[in-house]
Length: 365
Image 1 (tube, rainbow, N blue to C red):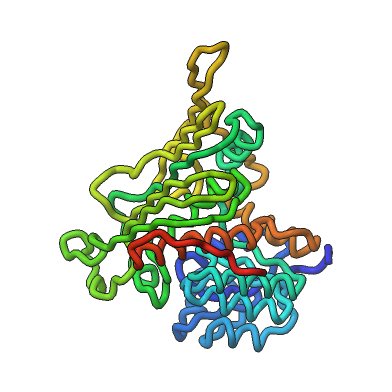
Image 2: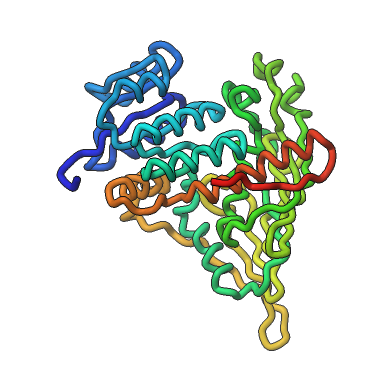
């Protein structure tokens, strides 16, 4: 396979697909051979914009592309979120590896079905969490795993925007499933859960609101009457290992931040400055609060630079996926971990709708 170019298909040619294609075009062993969208002419226009010659374009979406294309090695699934599961499962069932954009899907059961399809196919399923490749995000995990924090018992995380409600496919349950909770909440959850080994959630008490998304005062889009997802979410999550997670995320609020991320341990605590959505790096130098010889100390963890030879985070996301496809190695982003992420997101939504705490059970894979 070393002398053979990987044949790649792009399913969904909206905004995020451009980032995938830009990264694929930098890989010497890749040939983009097909693209599909459900909007007539959109895939062809996309390929023309990126000067992709000889690419076969389909107006019937992922199902048409996958049925017609033989010999594909992998696809990127860049559709609206509610279509992620069907496209991913179809591809895996046909023996095609998948890089699916985040959020993984809209329900825990769909996430589990995707994991089952990966397991049955023997192919690679990776999820689009490029922050995992950032040196500072990796430092968070290294600090936790070093044991310097002691036993971790409380985590506060989240982030979000004072104003920043997206439009189109992000803002309806039919297409997105969730709003800010899924769109950027999945990033902040992954940042801390990956650092502590992805313990399973036990119970969730969640809250969601949509005060800004439906308001003509704050949402000036003409399609705001279609808005039916959350623009703010918060939750108190009990995790295995006697850990509690205090979570909040926002597309719009009357505050500059819902707070920094805090990881509290019995020996030290770590403060991670907030960002708008955790889709790249941390918001500034981290601070470790600890004691030395009985004296309270603060140690600044300076911002680390990423390895330029590896390219930007998107390049690393794509390259790590391709390497797994070529070498038959495990997925760089374990989908079974993101199943837990998805279960928490869905649990927050369900708890909020019921107005009470609920128990969480992770579906079997």
